Amino acid sequence: GQNIDQPTEMTATEGAIVQINCTYQTSGFNGLFWYQQHAGEAPTFLSYNVLDGLEEKGRFSSFLSRSKGYSYLLLKELQMKDSASYLCAVMGSNYQLIWGAGTKLIIKP
Amino acid sequence: GAVVSQHPSRVICKSGTSVKIECRSLDFQATTMFWYRQFPKQSLMLMATSNEGSKATYEQGVEKDKFLINHASLTLSTLTVTSAHPEDSSFYICSARSPDRDSGELFFGEGSRLTVL
Image 1 (cartoon, rainbow over the protein chains, first blue to last red):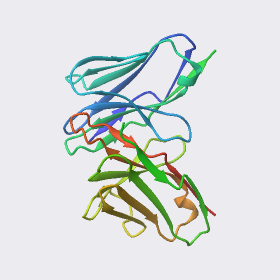
Image 2 (image 1 turned 90 degrees about the horizontal axis):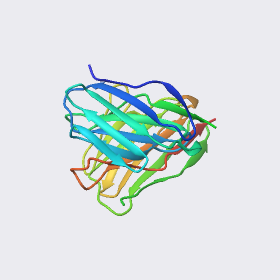
Image 3 (image 1 turned 60 degrees about the horizontal axis):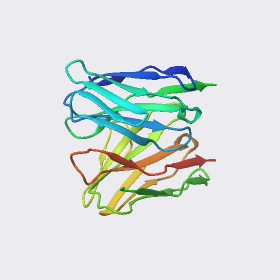
Image 4 (image 1 turned 30 degrees about the vertical axis):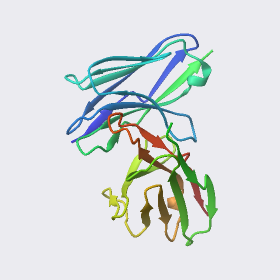
């Protein structure tokens, strides 16, 4: 079967760093995505990895290891507005996205 | 960047009526659009893949006659919830794939919150 696993909830402190992990097992792989979703809103794109390694984009970085079926999203200098759900999604062999259940990130002052 | 617009953002209807939700790609042509449903505190659930000029592909467990999808043009897909019931109340979101095939990025509409009384 196909599945995407990520923690249900994480808590971090404003100004700190947090890493959200995602492991996957899918039939086929055409890239891994991270999306941010605030409550009641549609997801917004954060990153896309298709090759192994780290992609850095401002305060956010995403890492991929295809051999391990593993990715993480790294958020630095956390701000209160970063409180949201973070969705990991894998594009399978048919180019459709397979979604994780999302990680709710709570930022405390 | 590419933008996807969804309308209406909120709709309240009586049980038994039908509701149509539109999804438009504003500055690019989308041969494929996706329709999702999201329950509170849960991830997106793919309902169907909308293909321009042909029938939509529905995911297992999604009723085709209940959720009618029409992709009449390269910039418009519609989802019609027929004979809506309270259990159909949910957040419906559409998306379209970026024209840049290499990026694979999906652009999402704003979402439509349906409440069936």
